[in-house]
Every structure is written in structure tokens, then in C-alpha cells.
Length: 146
Image (cartoon, rainbow, N blue to C red; front, side, top):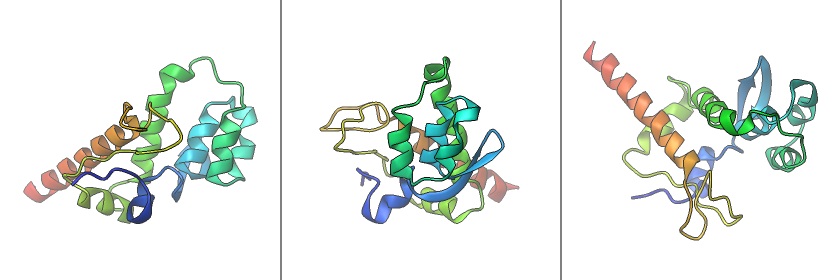
């Protein structure tokens, strides 16, 4: 059965879920806060540390994007997700238990890059979460075989 949105019992899959992550040596309260901060020059990132995830998303729409953002954003997200779902954490265990479900970041706000809206979208967040899950499962299987 597919997981079609990161709400309700699957809210913890959302980038808004409170779990500290680090970006360039600075700790942020959620993946969303750190991701949005990463769009800006380091000297402009402080406000992203002190706000709610939804506020960080809003702030991120108004920052001057760093020149390499389009090239960097996937690597930034991958790094943050690997921290959020670090091996041997409760969130990693929860993510592994979603297998083999397809993870879809279904949304109503029109995000067709990171998610799927009205049946359209690249679902990059869902894809990355499934990649993290596959890596965690592979590591677990390798440890069992040792």
C-alpha cells in the first residue's frame, strides 16, 4: 500500500517534523528550517534557526538565492534526510518499517518538484526517502550477515 501524503500517522516523514539537523556546523530545529536556510548566504541564515518550519518555508521564498542553488539543492536535501533518519534512531526504524510502500509527498499547494499535486509531480522528496530507506535496509541486512 502506498503512503500518499506525509500527514496523520505519517506526519513524521514531513520535513516539518521536529528533529535537529546540522548545516555547515549550525543546528536547525527541522529539515525544512535547514533546507530553507541553505538557500541563503551563511551570514543571512540566523532567522531560520529561531522560527517554526512553516515560517522558514515562507522566509525561504524571499531570500536572495545563492548562485549554485539549483545544482546544490538535491545534495543539501539528501544530507539533511540522512541526518534525520540516521542509523539506529527511532526515525530510521520507522522509515524501514514503511517498506515496501511507495512514499509519495502528496500535497495541495502545487509542489510538483518535491511532491505530487493532483496526480502530477516528480516526487523528489518521496524518492529520496525511499533511497534513504533502501540504504538503511541494506546496512541492516549487511550487519545481520556479519
